[in-house]
Image (tube, rainbow, N blue to C red):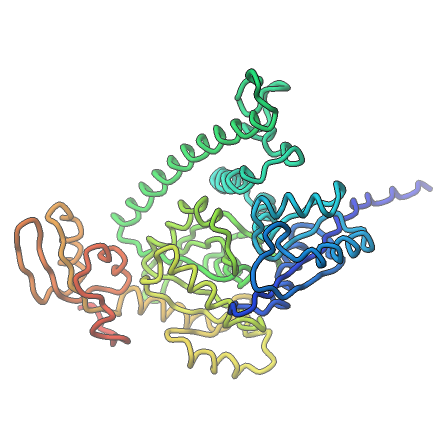
Length: 454
C-alpha cells in the first residue's frame, strides 16, 4: 500500500506584540481595549499571531520613544519573554519614534504602527491594477520618511523589482558622495511620481465612465460602511455577483459595480467600495481618491452597519466622520442595519432605527428585509423631491436642461453670466448641483415628504 503524502505544513506565523496608549482628556470613538481588540483582528487578517499587549496612560507622546522610558524597558522584557518578532502600536508613530523604539528593542525586533499594518493588509488584498497602484503609492509615501538601512528592501521593489544590482527602480548607480540610502530615497521619489501619473490616468478613465453613466441617466448607489459590515455579501444578494466574502477585516478592497433591478422595473448601478475603519490613515485617503470619488459622485449612499457588533454605533459614527472628510456628507443616505440574524433580541434593531433616520433592518446573508430596502432605495432615487435654489452659469447647459427635465421649476431668473433656478429635484440629483447651491435643500425641509413623478 502506498503511503499518503503528508499535507504541507504552513510556516509559523510571525509573533506580534501590541501596544496601546490612552490619552488623558482625549475622547475617542472606541475605548482603548476595544481599539486594541480591533488591532488584534487587523493583525490576524495580516497573518500574524498576537502574543500579548501593553497599555499606558499618557498626557502626550514621549519626545523620543512615544511611550515612557520605563514602559520601553517593560516592553523590551515582555517582547523577549514572548519571543515576539514584531511590535505594533495602535497609534501612528513618527519616523523618529519608530527609529528610537527599534534601537531600544534591538535589531531582531521590528516596530510597526496601525497605519503600516493596514497598508500591509491592503497590499495583500489589492488585485486589480488600480488597487495595486493605489496601495503601492500609499506604501511608498508612508515609508519614504521612515526609510533606514533596515527598510531599503522597499526601495528595491520600486519599478516592479526589475533592474540590475545598483539600479533601483530605473534610477542609476550612486553618484559621487551619494550613500545607498540616498539612492534608494531618490528611486522611491521617482516611483511615487510615476504612480501619481498612472493614477491620474485612472482618474480620467473613471471620470469618462461616470459621464457615460450620467448620459444613460442610470442612478448610482455606493455601498459604504465599516470594514466587515457585510457590503460584499449584500451586493452578492442584490446582483447575484461573485464578490469575495470573508469574515475578516478588509476582505475586499477593489471596487465592484453591478446593475440591480429595483421595484417597478427601474434599475440602478450599485458599487461596493473599500471598508472604512477608525483612525483611517490619511495616506490611504489620499492614495485612494480615485476610488473614493465613486462615493462622492454617487446619487445615493447605502451605509451598511453591522448591527450585531458591540460597537455598532461607534462604527457608524466613524464612517459618518470619514464621509464628511472626503466631501460626501451631503449625499442622501439610507442606513442599512445588517446581520439582524445574529441578534439575540431583534427589537434592538428597532431601537437603533428610531435613533437613525431613513434606516432599514436586514440580513444580507438570509435575505430578510431586502424587499423593504429596495423599496426605500426606489423611493429615494425616484420619488423624493427636495427644495433647492441654484445659480448655474450658462456654460452648464446640461445641468440647466437636467433641472427642467427631471425637476419641478418654481422660479427662474436669467442674469449676467447665469441663471437662478428655484424648485424641487429628486434627492439623488442633489450632489450634481451642490457646487452651485444658493440655498441648501435641508434649510427648508429636514424630512421631505414623498412626491411622485407625474
